[in-house]
Amino acid sequence: MGVGKIKRDAAVVGPWLDSVMSMSDDLHHLRSIDTTPARALEGDARDVHRHLAPQSIDAVITSPPYPNEKDYSRTVRLESVLLGYLNDRADLQTAKKTLVRSNTRGVYSNDDDDAWVGENEEVERIAAAIESRRLALGKQSGFERTYHRVTRLYFGGMARHFSSLSKVLRPGARLAYVVGDQASYLRIMIRTGRILAGIAEQTGYEVEGIDLFRTRQATATKEQLREEVLLLRWPGPSRS
Image: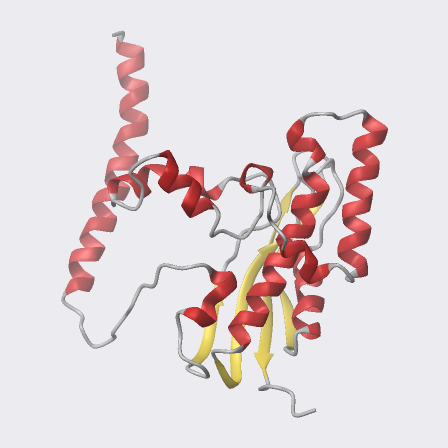
């Protein structure tokens, strides 16, 4: 092994190990703090009402997947194995089926979340634009053929999540979702926050704001993509 490679490896491993030790120190510190109880639940966020009591939640702060080609199960595969959540490929496939469909590597033939947004004009417009551009460009790979479908499945999965979540929220509960614009599918712009705001409103939520968190530049189009915090309020079930 050359000296240059050793130095490069040290430049990567050193900072990574420092970060791991820092997180370990934080966990040891937090172990001594027992004034705030916490509970971790393993389940599908599209069926959250199966895991929590009705009208038991006052606030939600989360960052769901964005509609892009990032396979989040791949990103955390090492940690999932080390922590014992995954033991083989079958475990991985089972886990992936509990995720919001946000990339083409996690789409299955029997998925039907798209039915939740079948009448959403903006989702349909975007999905149609993606498929039209694919045909115009002659893109024929299996993944590219699925771009329009995963877009529908993503927003349908989020609609299903909003519906399920509403069953466990107390009236007046407030919610914050960190979401981002995407142009991963053949450069068709997807304004994620705005579309989710419309879906939430249709489900009975009140939209209190869409606050800009930061911007980033799309690699392909050089456009500025917004990352936003979608702020919602659950007024309670409709009395009509």
